[in-house]
Amino acid sequence: MGFSLCPAEVNGPGFSFKQLYRSDDAGRHWQLIAVANLPGNEVSPSPLGGLPAVGYATDLFFLDEQHGWMSETRGFVFATSDAGRTWNALAPVYPPDEFVTSVVFVSQLRGYAMSWPTPDVTGTGVYREVPGLFGTSDGGKTWTPLCVGDFLACKSRS
Picture (cartoon, rainbow, N blue to C red):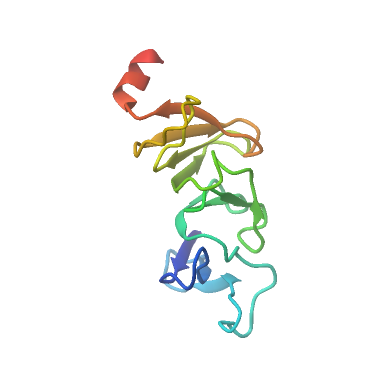
């Protein structure tokens, strides 16, 4: 089984049209299973449920046939537990305007997200354009900064 997320060009400030397809035969045939519709841009017939229209999709990861996650440039990660038919927003990675570039979950509770630029996790009020790695152990209810900027230095500390 495979999934393919097809985001469109930017449709408006903070919103984009998206379609999610599923293949059960190694990519020979694809079935539309979820859509993010914007007003005036409806696809008919529209599947039940759907993808969030907010943000610009950056990554899609499925742990198994039912459980998947999608990252968005507006700092959100969305989760599905019904093979992509419906999606729920998780807590913002940190803070809500982060550009989350990728997401991976190793179980239904433990996951990791990469962001760019990295938020001010030091409390100085300075935002730096360096990558950040964030982790969750509660399925995305909360995210903790694991490494900011120099990943070689972070690796040597672990």
